[in-house]
Amino acid sequence: MNMDAVHPGLPERAAGLFVSGEVRVACVGGLQNFVYEYEHGGRSCILRLTPGANRSERMVLAELDWIRYLADRGVSVSVPVRSKRGRWTEVLEQPDGQFICAVFEKAPGRRVGYPECLRDDHLYERLGRLTGRMHALSRAYKPNPRYGPRHDWSGNWFLRHVHGVPATQPGVHAACAGLMETIGALPREEGAFGLIHGDMGVGNFTVADDGRITLFDFDEVQYSWFVEDIAVQLYYLVYVYGGEGKSLREEQAERFMHHFMRGYEEEHTLDPYWIRQIPLFLRLRELIVYIGAFRNWDGVDETFSSSDNQWFKDWIAESRARIESGTPIVDIWG
Image (cartoon, rainbow, N blue to C red):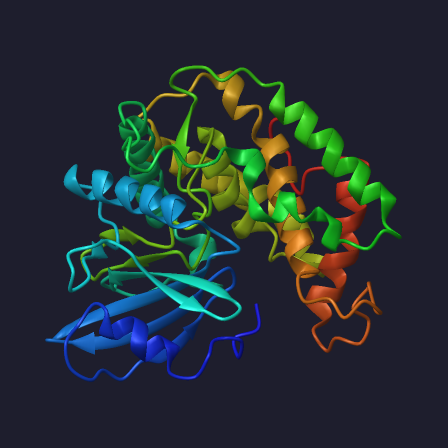
């Protein structure tokens, strides 16, 4: 997303719908959305502007309902904040479309990035416990009838935009269709399928000094198999290993799964059949990340050879080969 695409003054107008008085709004990034931070009354808040072309207001409200449900049951999440009118969302109309505005309390603590996250066994166990708790709560969750349910896994924005991958890569397009058919045929068993976070990767949680993890960025909330939430976390802990480091992927996967599942099983139980399906969902996440790499593609250099990021160039080539051959980035269950 082009971060210059927001009209000047729009973030300030949006913040003004939630707080009184002037606030200084700072851009902090975003991919599907425009994300800003501001302070008001001694509280740090995150303002998110979602293009209406990406999400309807109903879908955003369904997301916020799920977040509040988790928060009410003791899950540490970045909670939404009501607007001055008492609404969870506000809509700003622009000549070229609308933006759905939502505000969240900023998650306390700090993000744990690379390489720190790669050998933190205690973090993996706590993530497992948090993920298991969320999945256990998902089993009892009923969507608010005013908003309706969120989309399912096949409605993922990137899967719906696979046409962004060049047509000169028919193997990727064929692999996408085949993988979606295979996953779509899996049984939707109670206790194995429900509402998930959808993007619980490195960078979408913070850790406080006391070790408490707070989840945020629920924009990809969707109905899927619970193991997708596990596979996403695993993928982002192994895909960074490139070059000679590729030999460490299996070791990293073994370590993560051992500690993660120890925490997870304190809160929720999955049949071993579903754990053996993780390679399918590793392939799905790789496909989603690969499609995302072409989001701002210039239409010329599909190997990104002009990039000065050697890791990325190596990854894009290896990723395409894995996708076309149907090979997960790591498989410790084979």
